[in-house]
Image (cartoon, rainbow, N blue to C red; front, side):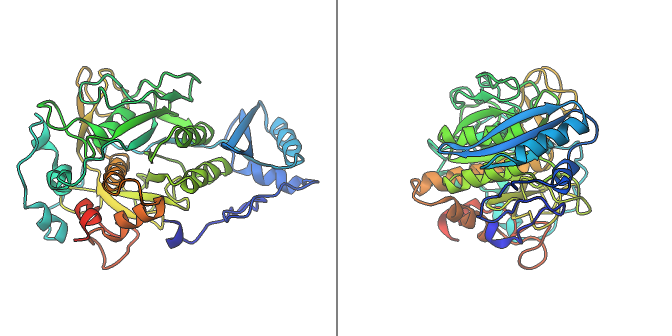
Length: 416
């Protein structure tokens, strides 16, 4: 969370800050300032130059594509000369799931394991007995208090299959920022998997159950059929979701670059009282800091296995606030998943691993808390409940692998 992190600044010397003061464009930008903006652009060409303007309905992003680095320099120079705008380039982001399921180490005694051993009767969903994560999170006990009824969770991802039997009636009308239309159908499968973790129907004798089965999904497609995208589309999706009434936003993607548009989109969401949850990334403890998980105000989520061990693929660092189930998670899937996913053609459910799967568990927990407290708590207060009431599983106290510990939804609701 923002108040627990050292706020990072761009090492390239951009005329920007991550504090509350707005960035100021130089009236006579030097070649050094232009080079600083261009330095973080992805290798190769073309380059997408992004200008951000603040409006009453949130930050607005305008893009121009430069076919060469020289053209990009000219666009950046011209944009820096405009009053009231900030300038950056688009950076790549991609889904935070992985093929790695190797973290099934020997069980260890822990408070989280002990708590999960007291199991009430499971819901009657046909695959419920294979959802170890719901056992670990004591879902059926939590549902006696809240199922997330009516809370809107935006899944900013590859889209969602709205007519999936376990999601039908739970999915609102969405938006596609990849092809700029109103059809947020999923052509990859990742977003549908994330949505099922959150809101799949419980007690319908079919498939799986979501952790917040009475919440609603707002699908926002910002990643293409390969699970790749950029920070501009993602930022537009976040702003749109806020303005469409999202209570929680789940971001199960990651990138290595900090940029203006994502920073401003997340800041807008947090200021509007929206809980923002993001995957910490799958680069392991030797990997770089990832965004948007590392942005101030975002709940960054690490992945654990069924034995309360942080998965070896899970990215470590100050971006990690809490950990949640992220290994061998069974959830909803489209019939024709991307070949990049470990999912079989024609199946409606699939096992996947990654911090992509951990993040929606926390987003669902946020929905449960929001519904239980009747929307009376702000985003920061909800985040505090989810992080400070987690069950410690790593080094005593906060650590950069598991954050404040393993998600404990029951304690977040009841204080014990």
